[in-house]
Image (cartoon, rainbow, N blue to C red):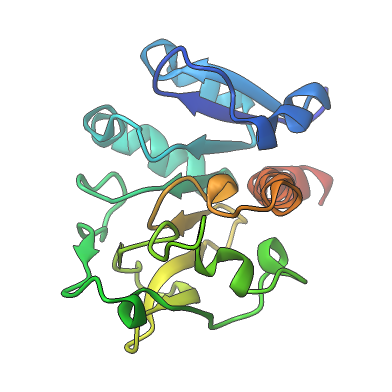
Length: 207
């Protein structure tokens, strides 16, 4: 069976266009959050959560999520953390000012998801800064900071990996495959996000 990632849908809206090729390739499956079952965590390699996720539900599944991460599962989280579903999580911290200089972003650490993609591609959308993020989710202990925002380079993107291959990729803003005006960039980000989410359990199975 082809390893796959679950895209957790918060409603019955259409799948975002950048993710459609991943669905067609069998690397992505869609499940409505209200239909998410404990057994889904056993068979999927990764989970992708949109910025519209019901975090009350995720908080209630904290034990299942911890077990998923402990067995190599990976989660891509978009949006503002409001409820902790992993031990040590803290709520989203908004920027104290929304001036354009405070919304500037900078890559802090190279990462496969962003390889070859200029930060300017994500700096503004339709000429307006701030779509990428307007604050940050404080990183878990041991996380790698990937993208900073504002003069203090607050971690709007970060990655937290466990020794067994499981982990969390956090983007503290709108869904990361939709924050560029360039459709090709959005599709490439979507492809790489899915690849990252698959890597933990698939590599563990191959070992």
